[in-house]
Length: 268
Image 1: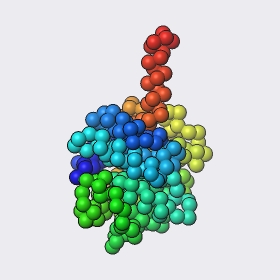
Image 2: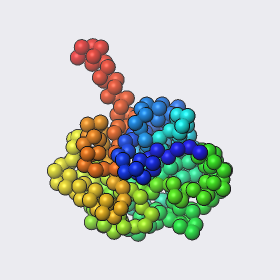
Image 3: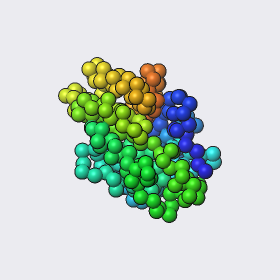
């Protein structure tokens, strides 16, 4: 059975640092997952990234979870469909059948949509997810019977709070049974509320909103996550009490490293 590093850190009430991947391929995913022993989760981004749900998710998840002998970081899949679309059910199905340890749904703005996401992520009687993938249990290194018994308690349901409607409804969303994480998207959140995107930090008024979301999440016994773009920014968020913090992305880290090394090489 593969490990679930993110869930272990959640249960221990310790901050979990992760990274974002936007480029497809099992070797790419494995390389990112092997980059640091401090990496506890990796988001496979099918919303703004170039990774297709099928078969891209299964390939990336396999690369992540098999990255180290004891089990790699937890693979979380962000689906393309947002909370404002008619249905995200089939995309959640593909993400979880691909072996994801959790699903992240963008732009969830109401408690009703959050309940729908939960139902699509859980097998009956807790939800309405269909059972039948011949591959998922193998990715988790267990039998299909074991997977069916453990999936509901192991899969993390995450909803993104990133527009005005979600901010207005955040208390009701946080109270939805089965939602595990409120994930703050500071870029869309800033734009939605009429402020410039973070550069690199959010506007002070947006920061007030962010801190309130954190407070609401914790008061409802839910974890709170946030997208950061640097180690320094992520460290600050951990000190503030965030439970799940993105540190960097594949494209961002590659670009920064190439620029930095070439600057040293050329003396510029």
